[in-house]
Length: 263
Image (cartoon, rainbow, N blue to C red; front, side, top):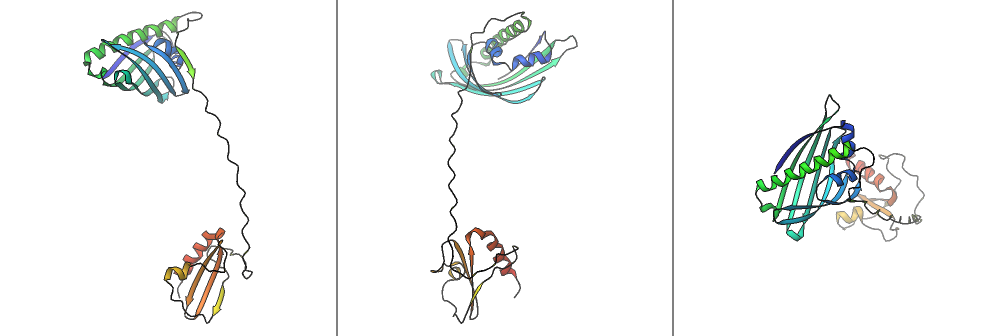
């Protein structure tokens, strides 16, 4: 169902815009409004009571401002349900404000509403008749609010802020354990990713019958768990590289460079 309405209000666009974003004012102007909970500057949860024919429903409607261009355009989206009458609704509203030469403002609203459940079984004519009555009441109250002088009586609608979430306690940072010393020859750290690290070469070691994976990445019983061990077999020569895990990225780069290097 689509509803489009237009009204001219005796105030500049900036003033009308200010009132449209005031939950207290909207709570008093929207027919059937029971309460409004302010979640944030763009999120609200409103309880609104409507009656169509012989069915009364009380919807808990969550509304979000999804786009705004002050003081001329506002778009909102909302969903709500009332389980007591097995009904739900989804709505999208667009409000257009056009300031007129005489200082007044044309307010045009375009609403798209989908109503499901028991309320949705009523004909389109009945739903639009109800919408027309709600619009007339809304504009009457809005104009009265704009033209009122002095203090305006309270609307009787309860407007509250959402309860603040308790702060989340920060988890203590665990100290980083120091690397275990490794019993191996003293070597210098590589100065570039492409620089190969110092290696330990053992002569006369026969080629192992282990699998290809274990020869390249197998664990040595004498090394610490914090090392990366790589063995390269070239004939009777075995090249063994021990690299700290902390330098795994450098090790990976060196290994790629080594493998693609021409013989």
